[in-house]
Image 1: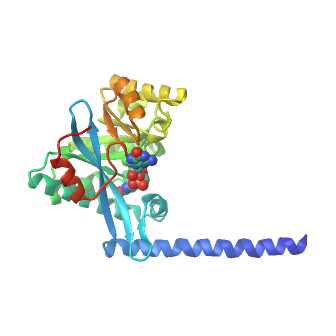
Image 2: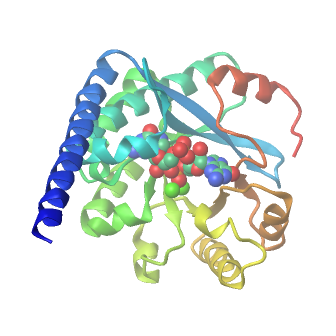
Image 3: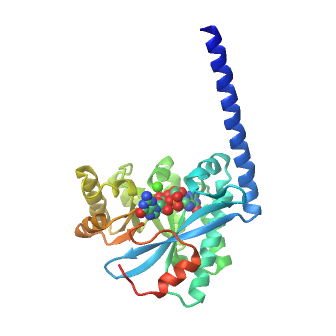
Length: 279
Ligand code: C2E
Ligand code: CA
Ligand code: CA
Ligand code: CA
C-alpha cells in the first residue's frame, strides 16, 4: 500500500507539473499574441424577424495560433481572466470591433449595432468607461452603435460597482446588454436599476425548446420581464426552426444562432448584408 501510495504521489506531481507548464506556456504565448497580432474577430448576425433585418452583429474572438491553429475563447479566456491579460485583450477587441463598424458605415453599409463581450474583470475596473470613451473617440464610431455585453454572473460579482460602470457608460450613450440571462441571479428590484437596453436569453435555456417544460417556462419568463421593463430580448444559440417558432409565438423576435448564421469573417458578412433578408 505504501509503494502504491508513493507511485501515485509521483504520478500526481508529474501530472501537475505538466499542467503548470502548459499553463505557463499558454500565458506567455497569450502575452505574445497581442504584440504579434494573432487575434481576429468573427461577426455573428443578430436578426429581427419583425422588422426583417440584420440589426447588429456580435464580435467573437478567435486566436490564430501560429502552430496550434484556431483557439476558441473558451480555451484561453479563463486563463486570460486569471492572469489579468483579459484587460488588454478586451481593449484590443473593443478597438478592432469599433474600427470595423466605423469602416462599414463609411463604406455605406446598413447601420449595425456592434456587440462586444466584456469580461466581469474588465467591467469592474473603475477606469473602464473612460477607456471605452477613448476608443470611441479614436475610432470615430458614434456611441449608439456600440453595445457592451456583460454577463448576469459578472454583474452579480459586485452589483454596486457594476451599476456605477453601467451608469457611466449609459451617460455616454453606449448601449448595454445583459448576457447569459435567465439563471435567475438578478432580483426584480435589481433589474429595475440596471440601465440596460437588452436581455440576452442564455442559450442554455434555448437548446431544449420547445420540448422542455422548465426551459419553456424560463424563456417565457425572461420575455415577460423584458416586456415589463421595456427591454429588448434576444434569444441566443437558436439552432433550429422549432426553437425559433416557439420564441416567435411567445413574442421574442430577435434571434442569434446557427439557424440564422454562424459567426463569420468581416468580408463574408459584407456579402450577406448585400443579399435580401431571407429569414
Ligand atoms: P457568449 O458571449 O455567450 O457567445 C455565444 C457563443 O455561442 C459563441 O461561442 C458563439 O459562437 C456560440 N454560438 C452562436 N450561435 C450558436 C448556436 O446556434 N449554437 C451553439 N451551440 N453555439 C452558438 P464562442 O465564439 O466560442 O465564444 C464563447 C464565449 O467566449 C462567449 O460566450 C463569451 O463569453 C466569450 N467571448 C467571446 N469573445 C469574447 C471577447 O472578445 N471578450 C470576452 N471577454 N469574452 C469573449
Ligand atoms: Ca455574448
Ligand atoms: Ca451569451
Ligand atoms: Ca455563454
